[in-house]
Image (cartoon, rainbow, N blue to C red; front, side, top):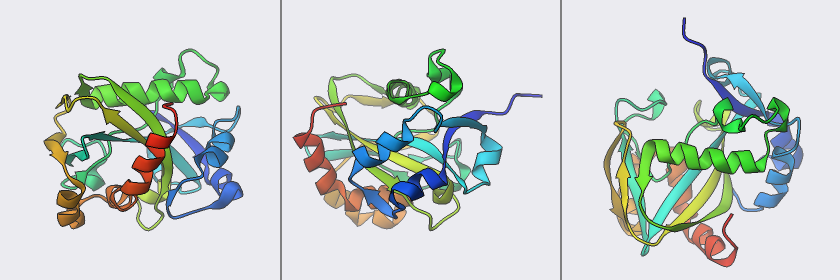
Length: 214
């Protein structure tokens, strides 16, 4: 019998103690300083985490930009999150697994390990063949649906020097760069997280340009 996938989570109350929010939160340091504390993150079997909204699964959500355009794609039938199949997305990312802990003790899984996990997760889904800057620009929460109620997004903006991105995962289809106006025209086809990020894209890109890369 295959072993259950273990994924990184925090208790919902950690976010509530800082201040629960819906949509995007831009005071990221206040939240990250409480999330990446020894003893706070833990690994949990994914089937359990998917059904227990008292925990939030930590999901890096990487938005790639070049020359004012945003990378987007449609989640195909092989998507790991079946509830999002057929939706267009502007975020690359996924669950963080114990392999990313770099032999650190389970409860000492901290920020550097997280950043390593982001690199791994992106490289599993797409190949980025250009230099880029990486900035964390927001946290993302949406308790209005079953998917969002058990996830917490950490939104990254990657500004690419060149638009050289190719897909690696079969679940990624119809991938290409689109202008914000083009994305707004198909807004209703976007997954909820991508809709919220599109709405806040101006502020997020400004923040990415005004802070050093992570």
